[in-house]
Image 1 (cartoon, rainbow, N blue to C red):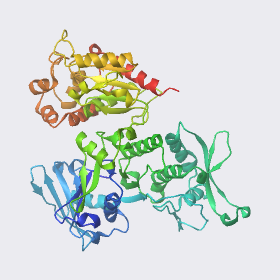
Image 2: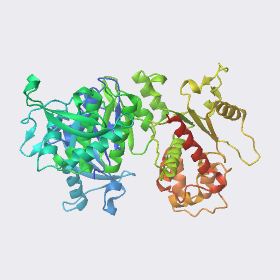
Image 3: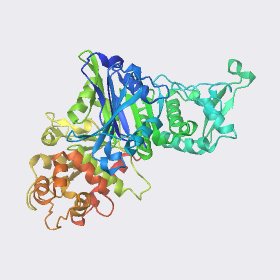
Length: 552
């Protein structure tokens, strides 16, 4: 599979205005979202990656420096597990001239010629293929003789070859038609439903009665109970979905490369797609990247991916903008930086809230816990809901809660229901003992939500982390925390400081988001709830509320 890696460069096209600046994609995820205005440099950043990994790599374009760092926890040799490999590629000889291991303390290790880790590194680099779909794309009516090179079928970045790829996969004896009729059609329906559902995909050749179209093949889709309908009549949004699926499902076989050895690049998938379709398509791309352990880049100037994926595991969001006569890449790691992107894109709040309901939480770690709990609760349910399509999260930021209301008569406060009339809210009680009272703001918000058919969830213990079971914490940090020590009213930071091992202390100190990700990795249906805390009941209430939001 593609190892986790970082990619940094200097002196490449728009990125050479500041000779000292190193453009860097730090710790690339499975899905990497490049957000910025038009002409900010998103495509140029993809070009830089492509220049290294495609079949016609041109390293001479890098006038200064190019470094690819591979994260050492993906190196099998345990001796080097705490190190990071750096490939420093010489732009004149187009060869790897230096591979160095560096650990977190700055210590380095070098390789002998027969060092197996070095051989693995070179093997990894040489095996990667790259597929790209440009923003300027279409699906064309094509002749038999186009886009065929020997036995291989070609799919260009602008969509040329898509019709021939489907036509020949369906009709040639050397190909497997079920890849289109079953696999591609199944995945297509995952994205387009519930708006529509297709029962067949095929190609037809235009005959002499079609004038200039004579002998050209065209893709047709069939809905249940209807005649086949030409793809050209569906508009460019549906063509984008087809082109993405051809790249993800069909082309790995055509280029004889495992999916986890391919870097995919998709530009501006939002073009001519309704926001709900955008969300379904991008969510599909994300799930594909995680399940197949590959690396996918998407560029966008839409806010939809920000709302869907900020703080999500295996996703990195990069803001690309022009600054001080050069183009810069910034990894987004805080909600303040997220808001800066929206400001840079000129987004209004009404532009980004398109889902059927909003779950208000204090911060990103709350969202991570809720998503994990919902996934466990719905594991055996037929009806599941998707974040970003069926519901969305918004952050109210602790003390800012006092500025919100759902009461239209309180004109001096921000009315949550003007953002979305379907709303739920999760609030820490902050109680230190059973008979403590919650503050007036939380009482007011709770009453207002209930009066307006909203869901209010005030934690049974002090804060959301108090729902974490001692079994789960022991499983996560290989600790031996006595059940009697952990109670629902103890401040969680105090509990971590006094009663847990150094590993959990270090993790918690690095931030709540990092901590929540680590804990949720170990969370399962046997360690996620304590009956006394009524967590299962609360998740059931939230699930039913989301179900109500999405009912017809």
